Image (cartoon, rainbow, N blue to C red; front, side, top):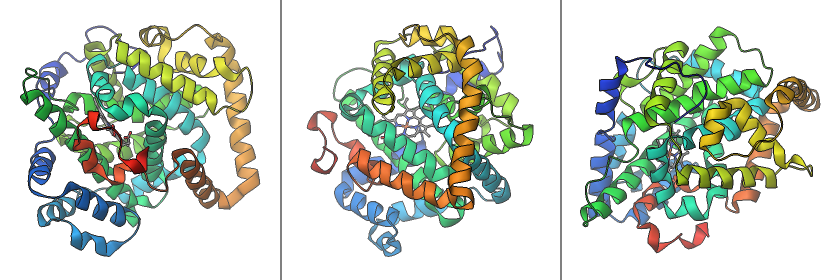
Length: 383
Ligand code: HEM
């Protein structure tokens, strides 16, 4: 996946390790989910996880023992630096506008440049038929982990664990379909693809935020990356692969892009659906050039072309305009809501998500549903 700057031949030492990472999924989660799908009612497990995610702590008693043990042992890593996590969340709270723009116009399209990984995304029925909902749910997840204090309340941990189970369920389903006679697939959602996507959510977003005119100090950037590597560990990325610091993460981003970046029909399709979705939610007429222009500014011409984006506003015009607009939006937010911004922001976000998703609950709260065959279509509550 990913973006802009990529000096050729960088990080050659990382190559064998990344080659190997393509053949590894998330063994402990995959074994667990595979067993659960064979021996238990996944609908019952999903119902208990959804209740747990909505705050019913006693629902944990309705989970199979093996899943309970998994959730207990695979939570926040021992020794995680909670002060740094909170500092990253406060940074995200101060710059919520810029980070949201970075998420939708840099991180997601950057992930779509990973030609092989994106085919897996496109493989799920939901991705093709319901990208708008999926993108909003990804936003919901990101806000769950960036909301100040969410590691303390457990919300960030549970949401991340649910996403880890979604990924395991997708792997189980794709591999099961292949073993039914469609040849040897590459491991879907493998360690290299996970790592590449993690750099999209972290350093690709930080780059975009800077391009929007926000001054990000080195310690803010390191803490933000630290939050995402902590999430990465909880998502099942092997600790030895995780970047140590921002410059390591940037090198990994460039190396993985060199290895995996490419044009693909799935990448172009998903980008086009994403751009349409963003434009539909923009208030102003004539804003239709904005999303492709922002993506081009953030990811550069080469990635924009891979994604099939049309030429729009010149990056040099945007580079002048955006810092002013972003600062203005952030100042208006702070002066309107002041210290109440976090809670008002959260309430507003919940409202918008509920309105746009049409359901109170994101579907990753019911992760094992993703193990169902995509041809069976969406369950009624998601249609
Ligand atoms: C740091 C890495 C990643 C994060 C934080 C992440 C996040 C998420 C989230 C929040 C969801 C649930 C919401 C939704 O359905 O969109 C999800 C689902 C999913 N993710 Fe990821 N993801 C990561 C990496 C990947 C990679 C590398 C792939 C594939 C190459 C992938 C494929 C999928 C698929 C297929 C689903 C299920 C979509 C469906 O319900 O049909 N993810 N991921």
